[in-house]
Length: 121
Image (spheres, rainbow, N blue to C red):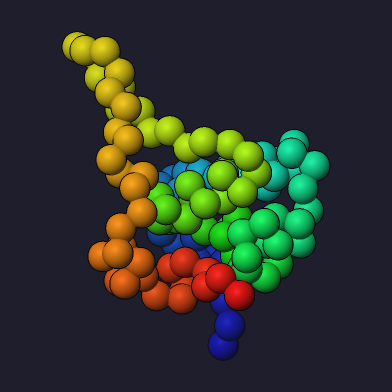
């Protein structure tokens, strides 16, 4: 017999339920961030897909993911005319720009699966 999600959540310990709710909220915010960024550039999913050389469905999937590869996120941002920068901040030193993480490598491309990174069509 199927059970409602609310019923299942109600049975979880309070800490576990709060953790799941927080993770779900973070994922929703990530989705909104990419979607809002695209919309702020006056781009539809179809237009961005054409710039990326993929189909619209893959852009939709990309915007829903919470574990994008850095190279995929870089391509997404660059297709909109931007540059992706990753900065590590520590309380005891100046921010550190992690530029080496964004370089495209053969190893990364060879190990990705189609579900990890949309294929260019």
